[in-house]
Image (cartoon, rainbow, N blue to C red; front, top):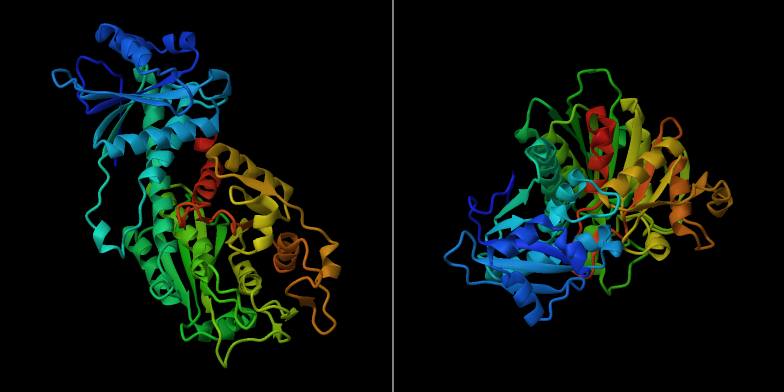
Length: 507
């Protein structure tokens, strides 16, 4: 998809289709300069056809007007925006996705796009352009790698031209396009990796995938891969235990992006849970929907997407991405309920459930990353079903040991519409994770507040730096689309953009 911005002159630009939004209140629609100009240009045809087809601008109502072969365009698509007072972020997303679905189905390739001129409450033009690109790319995404019948499927929409009411706004719109495209490409990479089946996407596959980032820009990236032997030397026994039942060897891949003028500036460390398949181990999961456990590496997949977007934007920042990858399977070598593991931190953990494996993997990584003397650490993990119970499938769970870091992530979520909600880390969870034979148990015997107790467990391994935990169990996968969502790539790229002072004022 290619995106452009122009100060539109109807008599000089050629396109397949013009798309315009119309509010239910006709007086508000008359304020739309381009709608009025176009209607006059067509001798009132838009007004006449709207009345004839009972098009009143109801929310998501559409009207396609075509057969303009002698003009500079072939079609006009009108989409209803409902009441102007109710037009918000949610409705903006819905009308864009619906309009792109219609345009793609009718075979339009070049689109003159005026929806970014709609008034969205408390949102500026930069936001509207950037989010429009995200929604367009989301609507057009499909994963057909293994479907021969769909190999030739293509999207008809290939070119979007945004209008700028004034030439002076064009530089900011171009920046919004640059950011929107880079972030959408990162989201797509994350989706493509997450959607791969576990027989393809193994720990070694994830490790090899990191080489692609290095090849994109050798000057900014460096890669280090820790094998099982390296993990053992570091005392990462909890990490190794999780993958002990699989023939696929556990690996930890460290990707360093260095692009700050202050070379000694402390890095931001992002840790992605990469359990390429989670059977639950001896605490076996139910067979129903177990195939979706290939998505238990979505946190790791998001690291690639984030770093790709950061590279495309050439952000002046130092970031380290850690891919913690293994496979939780059953065999005679699997770790067991009742085992006691000595972690890299020397804390001992009693395993009460082998399906609470993510925190065992992460606790050793959170200890390991101390060596980088990080500015802050954020881990991204499909960690608990309890987070889905608490927050559903639209909101990522956020828990942190630093209120300022939490606030920055909450702001980034509001800016990007990659929504997060903060849950507490409670000292009361200590008694819930009590073990009579080890320093801590890996689950609560009470079986309640699972997302919070999991975060408390992790917090015991990251006391030397600012840390936040993102539980994406509910948001990494869309059951409706049966596909990865690519979250929280948008959230964390926005967070990193905000760390670069040049971009703070964009919203």
